Image 1: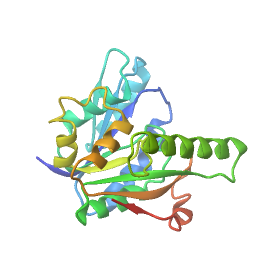
Image 2: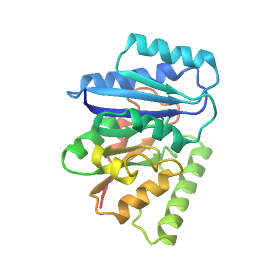
Image 3: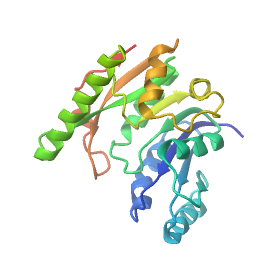
Length: 226
C-alpha cells in the first residue's frame, strides 16, 4: 500500500538517544493529514541499537528498518531506504535530527504546490557559541566556492535535509540503481542542471535542539526559488 510521506534516516553512528529524537518527528507526522512511514537504514553493529529500533517498530508500525552487517556510507544507506520507500513524497533527514521537525511540514506543503524538490538551507545559530559561528562561516564559504566552481545557482549543496516528489528522486537516482556514491552535493547539482522546479527554505540548524525550538526564529529567514 502506498503512503503519502516516506522519511528516510540513515543511521551511521550509534546513538542511544535515537528513540527520543525520533519521537517528536513521529508526533509531527501523526498530526498531519498524510499517511506516513519512517525508514531507519542502519549499519550499526551494536545489537542494543538494533533491538531499540525493533522495539520502536513494535510500538509504532509506521517505523520500518533495514540493517546492514558492515559499515556503509550515507549514500548506500539512503539507497537502502529508498528501495523500501512507498511514499508519494520522500524526505531525507540526518540521524542527529538537528533541524526542528516543523520543516517537514513546510517542505511537504511546498511539494504539494508543485515543486519537485525542497532543500532546507542550514543557518547555524551563531549566537550560541564561537564554534557555531565558525561552522556557519565554513558552510557558507564551501557552498559559495562549490556554486562558483561549477557555475551553479547558490544553494546549500551539502544539506542532508531534502524532500522530493517520488518521481523526481527516482529520476535523479535512475530508478534507485545509481544512488550509491551520489553525494548530497551531486543531488542538488543534478536538480539545478535538470528541468526541475526546486525551492530552498531557510532552516535553523540546532544540534541537540529540543522539540519546537528555533521554529519562530527561522520564519524570518528568506527562501530561494529556482
